[in-house]
Length: 212
Length: 368
Image 1 (cartoon, rainbow over the protein chains, first blue to last red):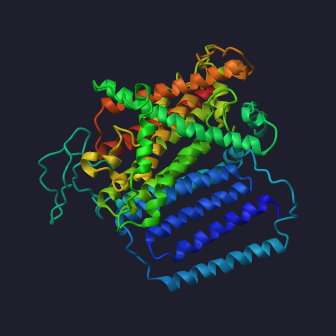
Image 2: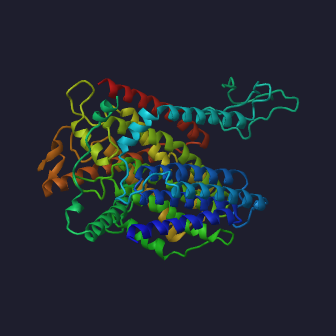
């Protein structure tokens, strides 16, 4: 084993143990933090495989954004402050699903490697592709999948916003809302629609036209 | 089509780090680490001293005067005081997360200095992905803030952490898009390469050599505002708004852990200013198109004599401190924004503006 291998194994062990702790820890926030460690560990694995760009994308997108959004969402909604635990009751189902996925994936990977479908693997100095080549490949050869993916993400984004907007009812008509414009006095609590569905009488604040 | 695309690429700086001139494998690594640590611990102190003095003068007082000449050792004295203080952990707090959080915030702020060039050859690493690396590293700091806010088991801390999280997510986007725009203009992500490309960059269609701040004044303004918000510096310091949240996510922190959060903020000021100097203000060039004395290659940027190197480092640090001065000035001049105003500025002003800026610069880059 070279020093490179030792580092690879160490990072792999760290990642795997963090992944196990992610699913076994009883505290939801701890689980999210271990998930962040797992994702950072995967970035480390990419780094040892000379995939610098991929490692940084992993760090920026998964650790810097996805894990942060998880934590943010947890804290905003139902995270117990401090040491209280908040545990999921679906342990058996989760074990079954993850175990099944593990068996499936490892069968596929082992099968692919042993059947030689991945081609002759030669032991050589590991070098990553240059960033220019990645860019040209993405925007010349793979531009259609790239655009399709971005449209998919855009649709998901718009869908999430539509679902999250409380004021748009089933009819699609929006109740009147008070938006705080810059420089206005802060509204203490946004006026809720009255029980009969009509908008409440607004006494202060600008009435916005409810832009889409 | 592929061929024309491949030929359009620009060459990246070929200069090596000064520290690679030393023989051996271990010694250059040790020198680089020492360089990064020295920069990380000294420059934030200088920035903090500058802040003390400038704020003092702007508020008609003198700032620190007792410790050292002109009070220059005040922050060192503060550091010693922080170490001596009792390290309190609230009994309801999540001990491990609480203890680790300041470190999670601090380490990325330190790692950024690995790629920042301070002068001709004065950098630890000329990474092909330098700019991307710097942005990725800074994006991790927010985890430490969220962890600290949650683990304190304190409502004010939690709200402070949440505000910090929302703020950093909101302002990361315009920051990254503004930085991408510079990368498009320069044709490289290497920070050294970006400095070098500014030495030869000519304003669209003319023969005038300028820094990127001139064609990208909008991008520079976006980057500056977003950087201040990323650092939670006043007037963007809602996460620690003392009139609402006591001290936000840092409420429960004392002693050395509190000092680590503060050091993160000041190191962030230095690294963000250094990034702005590299991206927009021509790095270690004195004036656009004027070669440094004693420098030969790269339009008077590289192959420098010791004098040229010293001058280059001095110019970079002077530019960094000038930007820190403007940040302090903004802190003194403007009151704190409200949380909704903060989010509004980012999503409704900075993000569309930075996207438009990116589109315009890309079109101009293709046309000229």
